[in-house]
Length: 338
Ligand SMILES: C[S@@+](CC[C@H](N)C(=O)[O-])C[C@H]1O[C@@H](n2cnc3c(N)ncnc32)[C@H](O)[C@@H]1O
Image 1 (tube, helix red, strand yellow):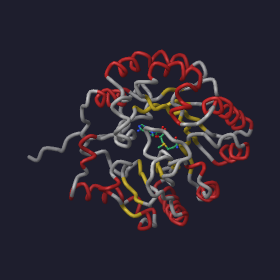
Image 2 (image 1 turned 135 degrees about the horizontal axis):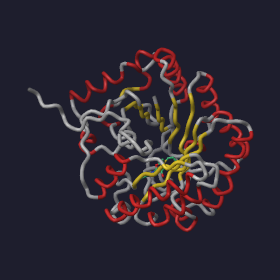
Image 3 (image 1 turned 135 degrees about the vertical axis):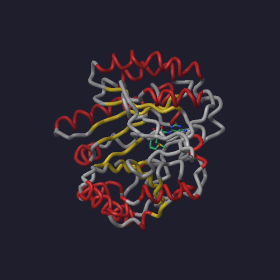
Image 4 (image 1 turned 60 degrees about the vertical axis):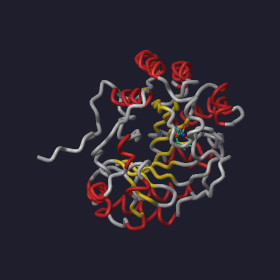
């Protein structure tokens, strides 16, 4: 079970494609640490009851600059859960933080969208790429030195302006000690003003498709994998063509949960307005085991319109690498009633 918790919606960077851009004026929130510990206890009970490992993954905003995170991470780990996070990497210059990550984290995903000419202005972070080029290898080397299981991953948001450098970026990043590279297409929900001039076009997807096998061969020499299976690429192509991806049944709550900074637990980050369960109401392993039934009942009562065009990367098999069969058993149409 993977649980992604967006613990803060504030960020120290200003990315024009992101909903959490620090320049945007809206009231920012952070998770309640008591709720995090309470729910982590329930997850630990669920893990013990079912034997299914739980990975709790911090998301933001920028999670690594949120003050309570380090002690929360230690507390949650002490309960037996594994920890991961997605970060912009701005705090990785701290040797102390790198030490903590090596000691406590199973995985860390770092966002990089291009070389300095693209990444730095896009994130409004001076010398950002250069810093990551220094800090990520330091983190990888420290993890190796202390025998940490830490898996480093780089995630790239693909848009029409950076597709041409994707192969070179992967080749560069593969020499930094990371184990995996993932990619997303630029999504348009968060910043509709940015999307039309930056979204992937069909020709961009053709290019990615052609280059994927070459990139995979190149980075395999460094033991690095570029994930994203056939179904994932088809999903990206479909959105470039404005085709919808209706999903009737994704197995909500069975393998993946999303929680936002206000403690709303949902099957994915898109269905928060429709299928939210209050994290404070989930106290036991049984409460968590009952979530799929509860989410299905909510869907039966009123299906989320988000599912008419599913954008969830978990459902679309972002983390699967070819040769692949879909990992997620997704039903796309409502079964016909006889
Ligand atoms: C919202 S950020 C939060 C974590 C952290 N601050 C970071 O930059 O990685 C999580 C991931 O979503 C990506 N992202 C943000 N806005 C996006 C968009 N409109 N489309 C696709 N990916 C996006 C980011 O690049 C990052 O990889």
